[in-house]
Amino acid sequence: MAKIKKRGASGQAKNYITRTQAVRKLQISLPDFRRLCIFKGIYPREPRNKKKASKTSTPNTTFYYTKDIQYLLHEPLLNKFRDQKALAKKIARSLGRGEVSDAARLEKNHAPKLTLDHVIKERYPTFIDALRDLDDALSLLFLFATLPSTDHVPHKTIALCQRLCHEFQHYLISTNSLRKTFLSIKGIYYQATIQGQDIMWLVPYRFVQRVNGDVDYRIMATFVDFYTTLLGFVNFRLYSSIGLRYPPKFDTRSDENGAELAAFTLEGRNVTENTKAIESSKPKASDRSNKEVSKEIQAKVDKVIKSAGLDQTMDEPMAEDTEESTDAIDRFEPAAPEADTLPQPDMSGNEAGALFAPFTFYISREAPKAPLEFILRAFGCKRIGWDAVLGDGAFTHDETDPRITHQIVDRPQLPEGSLPAIPAAAEGTTPKVKPGTRIPGRTYVQPQWVWDCVNDGKLLRADLYAPGATLPPHLSPWVKASRGGYDPRASLAEQEEEGEAEMAEDDDEAEDSDEEMEDEPAAVEKPIAAAVSKL
Image (tube, rainbow, N blue to C red; front, side):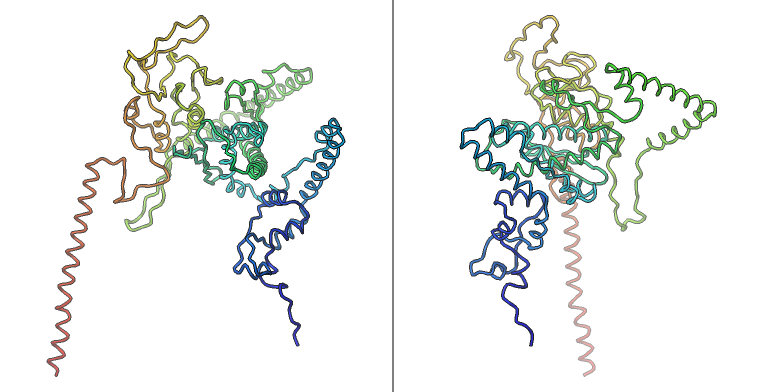
């Protein structure tokens, strides 16, 4: 006779475990359990029958897989959590005795540090897996980079988020990986393509943020700790893939003066950039000797190449490669009208990176400097100026610079009598331009022109985006207009033509259906007449 199974020894009761049971099994507190689940990527599950899974008559709300909790028993972070708990007891004991200096010493020197390197390697075995999970990480880190420092959000966390985000933006600028961007009510959406993976994230507008008390910043801080480690790994891999040193040089003084992206200096790993970096600084004796040796070796290599006649043969294929790379992108035409339509690429990497390359921009004070600078640099612009009030790192602070070709303004057109007078500029300062003054030979556009040019992949008419003009509708680049749907960019005549064509098609279909209905009774009468004649 088979042995009778006990209740709760198999099925859903064995596969699922409640949160209370999981906390008791791991012997940690509930906040530490939440942190551990966030780090390891373990989330609650929903069983089919809650009563059977909970082993009681009252169904519980939160369940986990038993195998997931069993997997957490061997996590090294558990020891760190226990060390933190033991240290907290020692600090509380010292404070109870009045030994404040000992408590401060324990907190400073004996606080255990959590390292999430092994967690990143476990959750993302390949680099592509990390790129696919980068959307939420970028959105959260860009959000924390704009928050004010409070007790829940320390300034060190905000500075770390800002540095990692700027490093990621520098990679996009160097590789021209940014593809689309969109201005929405929530913020600015960006989409970049990195190693074939489309990454989209949201950046909030830089308004004054008010910290809301309803948000649990402890859980948010746990996600930030994990995502900062993840983005650090990703940035290191991305910089290494294009031959750049990581982390890049960071000028603290320039960052304090509002330089942001300009506070970073990218350095390559080739010989030429290393020698430039050595020449810029004061070299030591050992550095000078290494530099002389490298020069001697390079001279010998050049002599061997010239003697063998390889310099000319090496230049010819390079020229051919450059000619091939500058050709237009391939277009795939269908063999037949009914064949499948292949998606056509909008822009190649070189075309996207050179969209704003020949221009010099000046950003007015009222325009959003940070997103405009990032987008312009990502699409090839090397010369961007702005007012000195907006921070350091500009190509020029002089608004009257004759090299400026485009100026981005966001002020309404006001009558000259209502504008205040500009005082004369002192010696050694840049002259101020009266608001509303137009400098000849310069194109004035509103900020939306930059976004629409990027999404369309070409330079649009600047007169449609002139200051004070009614702007065209700013549409999402991820929504394609379908036939018969509403297209705000289409003119009224085009919409009327489409409506008339659709009405004509509907009339033709109605006529065809009427003819078929008329033919059906005649077709039915013929078999009936034949049957009657046989009778």
